[in-house]
Image (cartoon, rainbow, N blue to C red; front, side, top):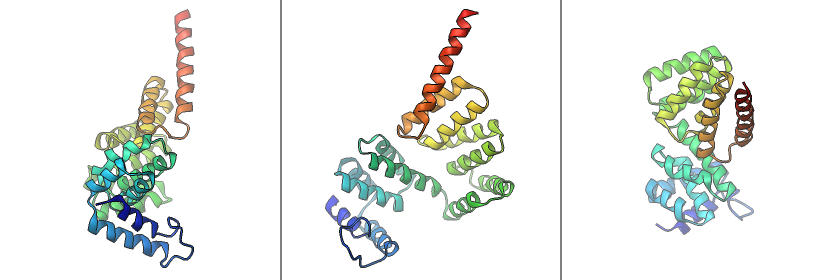
Amino acid sequence: MSNSLLVEFYQQIPENSPQTKPKMTRKEAIEVFKQRVAERYTEGTLLRLLANGDNLARRAALFALNLLGTMNACPGIAACLHDDDGEIARIAAETLWTLWFRSDTPDNNQELQRLVRLRDREQALAGLNALLERAPEFAEAYNQRAIMYFRQRKFERSAADCQKALELNPYHFGAQAGLGQCYMQMRKHRAALKAFRAALRLNPRMDGIAETIRALEHALDEEGRRDDKK
């Protein structure tokens, strides 16, 4: 299947098209795009286009994977986080987050979305506990519970959930950075530095991580010099 057809479908979506008067709303056009892609492309074909197409075809492939992709697509999409094209890398990161949030059953995915929108943190935490009881392989649920624990200053529990999320989904740069933040709060600076470096290897464009690494390297270097003087 050629990339020209995928690009043609993609460019019929308002905002992706040079047309001034779209025939459909964006929502309607996305649904048509999704149906056309599902009928003609496999995930493997989309991943091959993502790896070998021109930039427009690769953006179209990422858009399609955002709508239809599974966790099996994560390695190919994660490779795009290192792309020279910053827009490709940005879309890849957004696509990964989308896949992570829908990586379990439809009911569990919907429940996770509901829980992360709750303002009552205790209620949300109770819901995440219940969700993980019935979906113990749902990596994003662990990551979201880690965020809840972090906000409650339960850093050891948060770190444990980050580690579990990474065990289930080794491409999860968010959980890896979260682990670094937990170690920072626990004053385990060498472990934090290791975690942040790993996060940057997964996603080199994460905001603020490179600066945090440099600050930690400087602080640990100063600490080492003080130790040498004792």
